[in-house]
Length: 189
Image (cartoon, rainbow, N blue to C red):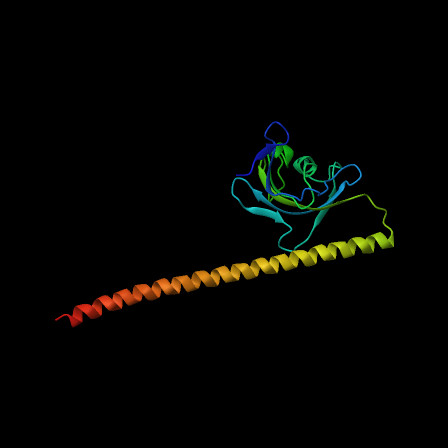
Protein backbone atom coordinates (compact mmCIF):
# COMPACT_ATOMS: atom_id res chain seq x y z
CA UNK A 1 0.00 0.00 0.00
CA UNK A 2 1.29 3.45 -0.89
CA UNK A 3 2.41 5.74 1.90
CA UNK A 4 0.36 8.88 2.58
CA UNK A 5 2.42 11.94 3.47
CA UNK A 6 1.01 14.85 5.48
CA UNK A 7 2.58 17.79 3.64
CA UNK A 8 1.29 20.50 5.98
CA UNK A 9 1.55 18.76 9.37
CA UNK A 10 -2.12 19.42 10.14
CA UNK A 11 -3.75 16.91 7.76
CA UNK A 12 -4.71 19.76 5.43
CA UNK A 13 -2.81 18.44 2.39
CA UNK A 14 -2.18 14.71 2.11
CA UNK A 15 -0.19 13.18 -0.75
CA UNK A 16 -0.13 9.56 -1.85
CA UNK A 17 2.14 8.67 -4.76
CA UNK A 18 0.24 6.68 -7.38
CA UNK A 19 3.15 6.46 -9.86
CA UNK A 20 6.72 7.34 -9.01
CA UNK A 21 8.85 9.51 -11.27
CA UNK A 22 12.13 8.20 -12.64
CA UNK A 23 15.02 8.73 -10.20
CA UNK A 24 16.66 11.34 -12.45
CA UNK A 25 13.44 13.34 -12.92
CA UNK A 26 13.44 17.04 -12.09
CA UNK A 27 10.95 18.95 -9.99
CA UNK A 28 9.83 22.55 -9.74
CA UNK A 29 12.26 25.01 -8.15
CA UNK A 30 13.11 28.72 -8.24
CA UNK A 31 14.66 28.27 -11.71
CA UNK A 32 11.79 26.05 -12.95
CA UNK A 33 8.62 27.53 -11.41
CA UNK A 34 6.24 26.95 -14.34
CA UNK A 35 4.49 23.59 -14.22
CA UNK A 36 2.28 21.68 -16.62
CA UNK A 37 -0.15 19.23 -15.05
CA UNK A 38 -2.80 16.75 -16.06
CA UNK A 39 -5.44 16.22 -13.37
CA UNK A 40 -8.87 15.10 -12.24
CA UNK A 41 -10.61 16.63 -9.25
CA UNK A 42 -13.36 14.92 -7.25
CA UNK A 43 -15.43 15.80 -4.21
CA UNK A 44 -14.30 13.59 -1.32
CA UNK A 45 -17.84 13.33 0.06
CA UNK A 46 -19.53 12.09 -3.13
CA UNK A 47 -16.72 11.03 -5.47
CA UNK A 48 -18.23 13.31 -8.12
CA UNK A 49 -15.75 14.65 -10.69
CA UNK A 50 -15.94 18.44 -10.77
CA UNK A 51 -12.99 19.22 -13.07
CA UNK A 52 -10.65 17.27 -15.31
CA UNK A 53 -8.16 17.67 -18.11
CA UNK A 54 -8.78 14.06 -19.17
CA UNK A 55 -11.97 14.76 -21.16
CA UNK A 56 -10.36 17.15 -23.63
CA UNK A 57 -6.80 15.92 -23.13
CA UNK A 58 -5.52 19.36 -22.16
CA UNK A 59 -2.60 20.43 -20.02
CA UNK A 60 -3.08 22.99 -17.25
CA UNK A 61 -0.11 25.33 -16.71
CA UNK A 62 0.63 27.69 -13.84
CA UNK A 63 3.47 29.22 -11.86
CA UNK A 64 4.05 27.79 -8.40
CA UNK A 65 3.90 30.22 -5.51
CA UNK A 66 1.95 32.97 -7.27
CA UNK A 67 -1.44 32.19 -5.69
CA UNK A 68 -3.01 31.41 -9.07
CA UNK A 69 -4.21 27.98 -7.84
CA UNK A 70 -5.54 26.64 -4.55
CA UNK A 71 -3.04 26.58 -1.70
CA UNK A 72 -2.90 22.77 -1.66
CA UNK A 73 -1.57 22.71 -5.21
CA UNK A 74 1.22 25.19 -4.41
CA UNK A 75 2.16 22.96 -1.44
CA UNK A 76 1.88 19.58 -3.20
CA UNK A 77 3.38 20.36 -6.61
CA UNK A 78 6.59 21.62 -4.95
CA UNK A 79 7.15 18.04 -3.71
CA UNK A 80 6.58 16.32 -7.06
CA UNK A 81 8.90 15.29 -9.89
CA UNK A 82 8.16 15.20 -13.62
CA UNK A 83 6.37 11.94 -14.48
CA UNK A 84 5.00 11.48 -10.96
CA UNK A 85 1.29 10.91 -10.44
CA UNK A 86 -0.06 11.61 -6.97
CA UNK A 87 -3.39 11.66 -5.17
CA UNK A 88 -3.68 14.95 -3.30
CA UNK A 89 -6.37 15.21 -0.61
CA UNK A 90 -7.10 18.86 0.26
CA UNK A 91 -9.09 20.00 3.30
CA UNK A 92 -11.21 23.06 2.60
CA UNK A 93 -8.74 25.44 4.31
CA UNK A 94 -6.24 24.57 1.57
CA UNK A 95 -8.83 24.58 -1.23
CA UNK A 96 -11.91 26.83 -1.55
CA UNK A 97 -12.69 27.27 2.15
CA UNK A 98 -16.07 28.25 3.55
CA UNK A 99 -17.12 29.92 0.28
CA UNK A 100 -16.60 26.87 -1.92
CA UNK A 101 -16.72 27.47 -5.67
CA UNK A 102 -20.40 27.20 -6.62
CA UNK A 103 -22.03 25.41 -8.24
CA UNK A 104 -19.47 22.59 -8.53
CA UNK A 105 -17.74 22.84 -5.15
CA UNK A 106 -19.84 23.28 -1.99
CA UNK A 107 -18.62 25.23 1.07
CA UNK A 108 -16.10 23.47 3.34
CA UNK A 109 -15.51 20.71 0.76
CA UNK A 110 -12.59 18.31 0.98
CA UNK A 111 -11.24 17.73 -2.52
CA UNK A 112 -9.24 14.88 -4.00
CA UNK A 113 -7.07 15.44 -7.05
CA UNK A 114 -5.12 12.92 -9.05
CA UNK A 115 -2.34 15.05 -10.49
CA UNK A 116 0.40 14.17 -12.96
CA UNK A 117 3.32 16.57 -13.18
CA UNK A 118 3.98 16.61 -16.91
CA UNK A 119 6.73 19.24 -17.07
CA UNK A 120 8.38 22.10 -15.21
CA UNK A 121 10.05 24.97 -17.00
CA UNK A 122 11.77 28.30 -16.48
CA UNK A 123 9.96 31.60 -16.98
CA UNK A 124 10.28 32.71 -20.58
CA UNK A 125 9.86 35.88 -22.53
CA UNK A 126 7.16 35.73 -25.17
CA UNK A 127 9.32 35.75 -28.25
CA UNK A 128 7.83 34.25 -31.40
CA UNK A 129 10.29 31.35 -31.24
CA UNK A 130 9.48 30.46 -27.63
CA UNK A 131 5.73 30.63 -28.30
CA UNK A 132 6.01 28.31 -31.30
CA UNK A 133 8.33 25.98 -29.36
CA UNK A 134 5.82 25.91 -26.50
CA UNK A 135 2.94 25.25 -28.89
CA UNK A 136 4.88 22.40 -30.51
CA UNK A 137 5.72 20.97 -27.09
CA UNK A 138 2.09 21.10 -25.97
CA UNK A 139 0.93 19.54 -29.27
CA UNK A 140 3.37 16.69 -28.74
CA UNK A 141 2.09 16.20 -25.19
CA UNK A 142 -1.48 16.19 -26.52
CA UNK A 143 -0.55 13.64 -29.20
CA UNK A 144 1.04 11.40 -26.56
CA UNK A 145 -2.06 11.70 -24.37
CA UNK A 146 -4.34 10.85 -27.29
CA UNK A 147 -2.27 7.77 -28.09
CA UNK A 148 -2.40 6.68 -24.44
CA UNK A 149 -6.17 7.29 -24.34
CA UNK A 150 -6.67 5.28 -27.55
CA UNK A 151 -4.60 2.43 -26.11
CA UNK A 152 -6.64 2.46 -22.89
CA UNK A 153 -9.87 2.45 -24.92
CA UNK A 154 -8.62 -0.52 -26.96
CA UNK A 155 -7.69 -2.40 -23.77
CA UNK A 156 -11.12 -1.64 -22.31
CA UNK A 157 -12.79 -2.94 -25.48
CA UNK A 158 -10.73 -6.16 -25.31
CA UNK A 159 -11.69 -6.66 -21.64
CA UNK A 160 -15.37 -6.15 -22.47
CA UNK A 161 -15.14 -8.62 -25.37
CA UNK A 162 -13.44 -11.16 -23.10
CA UNK A 163 -16.16 -10.70 -20.46
CA UNK A 164 -18.88 -11.15 -23.09
CA UNK A 165 -17.19 -14.29 -24.43
CA UNK A 166 -16.86 -15.71 -20.91
CA UNK A 167 -20.52 -14.95 -20.17
CA UNK A 168 -21.53 -16.67 -23.43
CA UNK A 169 -19.47 -19.77 -22.52
CA UNK A 170 -21.05 -19.92 -19.07
CA UNK A 171 -24.52 -19.52 -20.57
CA UNK A 172 -23.80 -22.24 -23.12
CA UNK A 173 -22.66 -24.62 -20.34
CA UNK A 174 -25.77 -23.84 -18.31
CA UNK A 175 -27.98 -24.41 -21.36
CA UNK A 176 -26.19 -27.67 -22.10
CA UNK A 177 -26.71 -28.88 -18.52
CA UNK A 178 -30.40 -27.99 -18.67
CA UNK A 179 -30.84 -29.66 -22.04
CA UNK A 180 -28.74 -32.70 -21.07
CA UNK A 181 -30.67 -33.27 -17.84
CA UNK A 182 -34.05 -33.26 -19.59
CA UNK A 183 -32.91 -35.62 -22.34
CA UNK A 184 -31.59 -38.23 -19.87
CA UNK A 185 -34.81 -38.24 -17.89
CA UNK A 186 -36.88 -38.84 -21.02
CA UNK A 187 -34.58 -41.50 -22.39
CA UNK A 188 -34.43 -43.48 -19.11
CA UNK A 189 -37.97 -44.96 -19.34
